[in-house]
Amino acid sequence: MKIALVNHTFSLSHGGLERFSVNLATALHHEGHTVCVFAHRWQDLPEGIQICFVPMAKRPGFWRVLSFAINARSLVTRETFDVVYGLTRCFGLNLYRLGDGVQRHWMRLNYPFAPWRWLNYMVNPVQWANLYLERTILGPGGPWIITNSKLVQRHVQRYYGSDPKQVHVIYNGVEPSRFNPQQVRVNRDRVRSTLGLKSTDKALLYVSNNWKRKGLSVLLRAVADLGDVGNMVHVLVVGRGKPAHFLRLSERLGIATRVHLIGATDQVENYYGAADLAVLPTMYDPFSNVCLEAMACGLPVITTAENGASELICPGENGFIQSNPRSWQELSALLRNGLKSDLTAMGEAARTRVAGMTRQQNMRETLDVIRKWTEASR
Image 1 (spheres, rainbow, N blue to C red):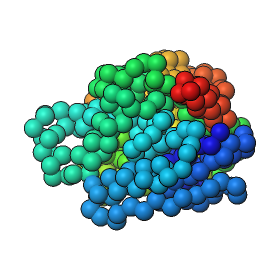
Image 2 (cartoon, helix red, strand yellow):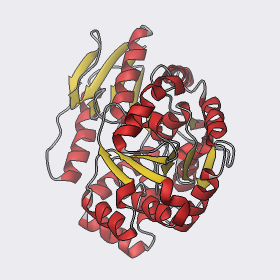
Image 3 (cartoon, rainbow, N blue to C red):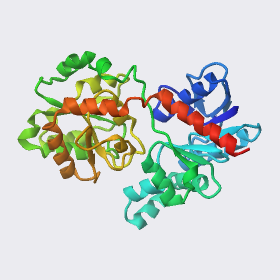
Image 4 (tube, rainbow, N blue to C red):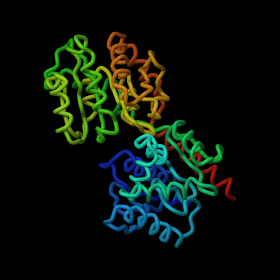
């Protein structure tokens, strides 16, 4: 097959979507398909893959979003492809991977009061541009959809009434040679010693580059609410963020000496190995790779019902699910339950649950949907 892949950026050194894009292009190429990448930026792609530069405006933000979608469609239609697969919002797609969730749902969560929500669309037109593209793609007559969780599948059907037969769920995968208990625990003692942790301390791992949306404040308040139980609890914060507010909050809550702002790292597995429990009280996450990686490394996970990765959690067996992302009181109660549980047994149950959820399996399932679409379109 001749397959077009469309995304702003293809790179192994950027975020999860950009890495996924490179891995998919590579897998399709190795399967013997002719792969054409349409992108504004790219790196790490193997030889033999055709690349087409897609221009996009630098500013304003809404035109940057729309210009890529318009220019990509114009370039793609100059050639004939068996399938055009979009990894970002774009026009003229046959398949679309909805990896960043449903915009309408996120806006309702973030702005429950409708007038504030519409005011945000007016003052921040990039939100409007994304909504416009989403409506175009997910509306009647749109492409087949691939989501990374049943949560997002339900949102697509709820907000846009999409045909269930055209919405396919393919869970994310991890690289087991990198994310496994034996590999990540090699440096456990060294990393914990560097952080000043005692053998009796419990380390909660929080990994995110969006500290506000993914609930770092909720986690800090929950830890402070543990009282004497929390004296042995440390929070390891991995990822990029603006620390000033959270440092002040930690000071005010009296837990500053037990909050470790580690920053961004390309060796996150070291911190999976150093931790005892992974926590991500996110307001909305289609499917957090952090939770999947943590479970593959043998860590129990606490996350919210607004995270598609919660579909992997059996409460009390391999983690816990927080029903209200804004409730630090609820999270504190879950932490109490977790800290008095057998975390080793729960971690093993977590690892067992995600065994087989590899990057290779994800690619096989993606290829299967591509083949089904081409057969159905004949």
